Image (cartoon, rainbow, N blue to C red):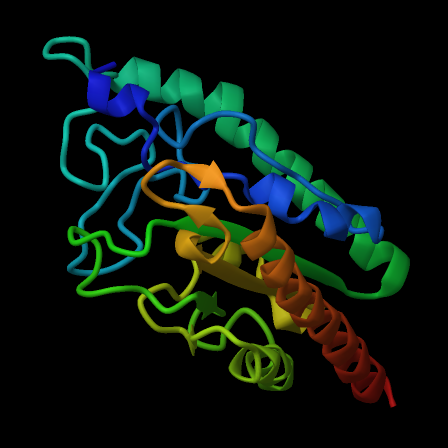
Amino acid sequence: MTEAALRLTDTDWYVRRLYDFASLAGATVVAATYSRYLIDLNRPPDDEPLYEGQLKTGLCPLKTFAGEPIYQEGREVGRKGRQRRLERYWRPYHAELEGSLEQLRSQFGYALLWDAHSIRSTVPSLFEGELPDLNIGTNDGKSCPKEVEDAVAEVAANSPYSSVVNGRFTGGFITRHYGDPARNVFAMQLELAQRTYMNEKSLRYDGRRASELCSTLSEMLAAFQSSASSFVREARQ
């Protein structure tokens, strides 16, 4: 890899740490332990673009979000390499994710998927200007009922943070593929602007900011759960 890639600039920094409160509360957590530069788990296996007209970073990206090459010249991952990564990393992750959702749906009658991400506040190659703090995506309302989307969006709107629903990020492959309200599987993506919990220049975790943010995240997840439970219960009556 190039020096630019080895800095791992496009990492969803500290997201697993940020959501520790969720696992402590009993949520099932499926988390990647390797970089999106190896393979991007939130991209479809056929590598079709998710956002029309936007920079395509790819299933096994060759460039960073800033457009810098990830691999040294002549050392790029090829077709066979991409296929190996798909089989070794992408498919096991999604098998685990799908299995977890089916187990929850079988046990409770419905399953909730909260797809947690973060990104630098400004990435000119992907979007203009600066991102809102909280970027909620529901595949334009297709991955969960409107009542559920509205409940989470209301918490975000009443928080100290700026927010948007289905703005620059409407949800990646995970939200679009697994969100299936007809089967009572509700999916939502939250893309956090990293300034809300860390220093984007030094890449250091900011405990004070993170603690304040976690209060809002906890309320959003609680609204997700309670509104989904109410929706399912009313639908059965």
